[in-house]
Length: 68
Image 1 (cartoon, rainbow, N blue to C red):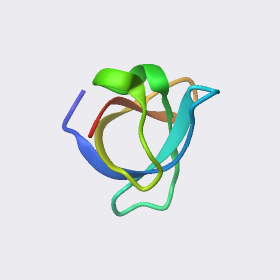
Image 2 (image 1 turned 180 degrees about the vertical axis):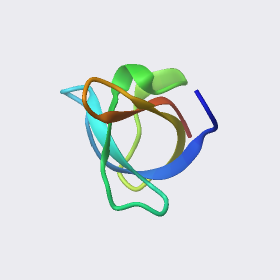
Image 3 (image 1 turned 90 degrees about the horizontal axis):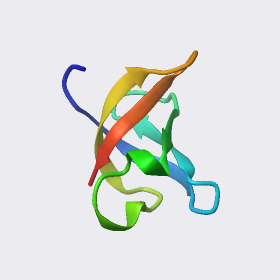
Image 4 (image 1 turned 30 degrees about the vertical axis):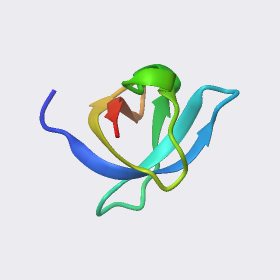
């Protein structure tokens, strides 16, 4: 895994345990799982700035190791 990317949380479904982040300089949404949020609570808010590692999952890019 290479460097970390910066982006903003576009949406987060607390009940479903997933969300989407938009990397700075992009308009594409990237999926993330609540399991990939680091820190207590494993929750984020819409519009919150986060850093993450972008990896290729099963047929799509995913954000891993989310930090805020």
